[in-house]
Length: 278
Ligand SMILES: Nc1nc(=O)c2c([nH]1)NC[C@@H]1CN(c3ccc(C(=O)N[C@@H](CCC(=O)O)C(=O)O)cc3)C=[N+]21
Image 1: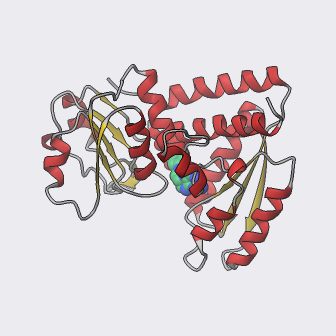
Image 2: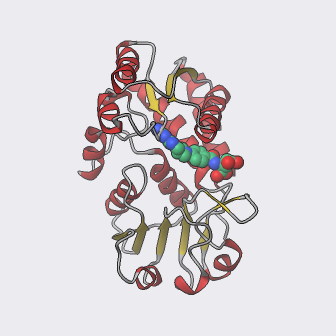
């Protein structure tokens, strides 16, 4: 079974749109982008487009690549103080000279629709999440929508980043899975993957996951954003071959990516409701 993230994202955006129209709220998402990386610019454009589609106002702050950490902090603090802004998203990665942790920690936790602030990560880790990071949150939604319950299952998460691997592991623990987190120093990675009922791959290497690495009937979630030999967008998974052996699999494109955007819309609506006391 192919898990259609594009279709589900559209469905979720429709329901967010309906809820916004009925509530009379005007949620507002502010994005901050530093520099002119074309991939980052494309992602931010996609987020603004989704906002427009569901009835969320969006504001974009664009700072030059050479901005200092202090200048980025100042932009965030103005958005923190602006009562018309409900959600703040600082597009990552920041240029290497900027202090990313400091910037993330400066976003007001009540506006942190990315869920990257240590307060929100702590809430998630304690099993009482407020804002859940959008990519792992979107993955949990796709599992639940397709009736895949992680309870009691062996889940292997490959990658330990703060935006994907770590919150993914926390969400799967909260859903009563037995979770293993693998990374670049893992010994016998293939043995770990072969044991998994659910594999979430955020490695960043094209077609790394091959059919002989996964068990029959595994659920395979591909978070990878890579280019194949011909420069075409592809995931971490050798899709054609792994699909045959899996019971469910997300494609790239059309899988996890659109779910990230759908979850951002849900988080922004949630933030607007919190601010307006609804
Ligand atoms: N503060 C922050 N928050 C993020 O959520 C964040 C970020 N920084 N930095 C970069 C990553 C990446 N990300 C994606 C969102 C949508 C797609 C997506 O919709 N992809 C389409 C394909 C788009 C294409 O054609 O390239 C798909 O998979 O079908 C992918 C990747 C959000 N990120």
